[in-house]
Image (tube, rainbow, N blue to C red; front, side, top):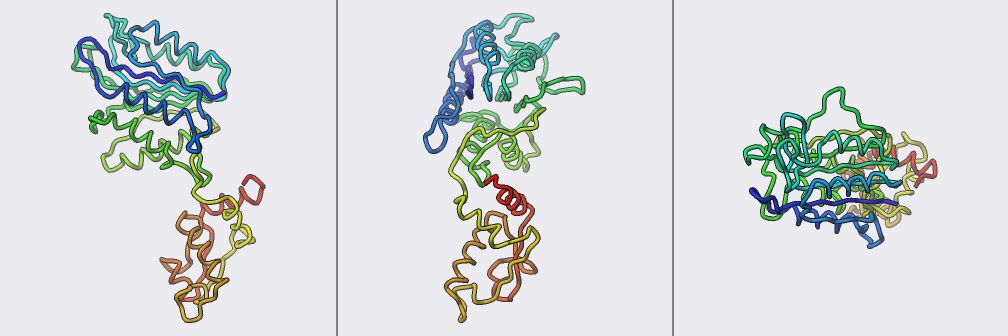
Length: 316
């Protein structure tokens, strides 16, 4: 069982938000099904929770059940007072702003789920009268998260625009990643590849979401269409009998050359597709075309070597 609790709150009494509920709906839609329409997470979508007790009971229900993956997504305000940080709920009160982070982490750490994922796309409540200082969800060396837990959050002083008319930036990037932008060759998107995709996009702004993980596995969050057919991918071990083999080319592999050979051209198209996926690289030339025209060779890249091993060991 793969279970997800998805929360979006816009209806804060004094400072309402826009886009948190719609982003929660986007996450519900993308996580509920894989790209081929098959079932993925069993999702519970709850919009505009009004109380801390309701939020807490939903979180407890999620993480006290035995699941392969339990995923919690929250979009709304977060803030801090003199005691701790909170996921803020509309019934906030002095020294009781909502669900405290220490309580959330305690619930997660005691969960029997094999893998626990927390995604927090929150708005800093500083300056709204909610909380009393600038908010930063940071971990010190003494913070403990149990094996199998991963946290992805935008709460470490990210200063890029965090809310637009179409939704919040972090959720938008996560959604894009889950549609296939962060998928591996087999079409699987993990929380690790999602973070890597987001980090690459935000790099020019010198911004990074918070990412903390204590896990030795990276289960697929969603299955997308493979970037290459498995039958074709398995040609790696045929074209490259050993992991450090080189495949030697000549002009007959390029169909536009005067000596083009049809069978060699078919093989070359496969090698070029491998090259486009960073599985194969030309030796001594920048492009595969010139490797063929100048009778050079090509070889497996580090990524290609990884997939070569997986195929050789019967994993693909």
